Length: 200
Image (cartoon, one colour):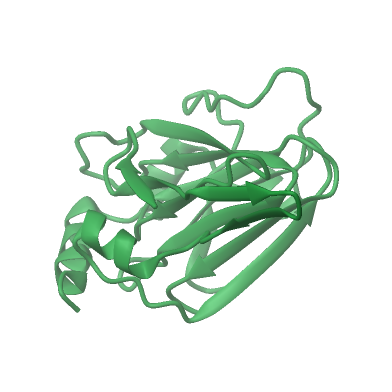
């Protein structure tokens, strides 16, 4: 597996080798050893989530309080998504920057997203499945969102789809409002959390 940093620090794209033959294909879609070698940190999986989305569905921008935060490994076994990672860590040199990757059933890429970063995706096909491996269990009091079509973020959602949001995501604050309310993770808190996970 090839693990490469993305344009937002502390997020990586993971590209597996896919072996095809007359029967179909085989791949290792997640490798803990390859991920740790590339990132220098541990990733303990405590929960696995799965979503199925119609074309145009946008989920996110989601994040969790730090500490402890929630790291994610995101993979699309069926269909396709435009996956977007946003630096919402207050005080980060790349605050407000985003990076995007197409995850699909052809290239079989995944993304690893560190604690404190925002995550969202848009389904590019009907009946798209996304699987998430996460480092902390669901905690509704510690999980939050930023509006995914906030013009200040200008996320690269495709122009040829009608964006469909959940009521919760549609009611999420803008990035500026989230900063003002103190909702967002602090960059220094995230760095301390990453340090704790080195060699853990």
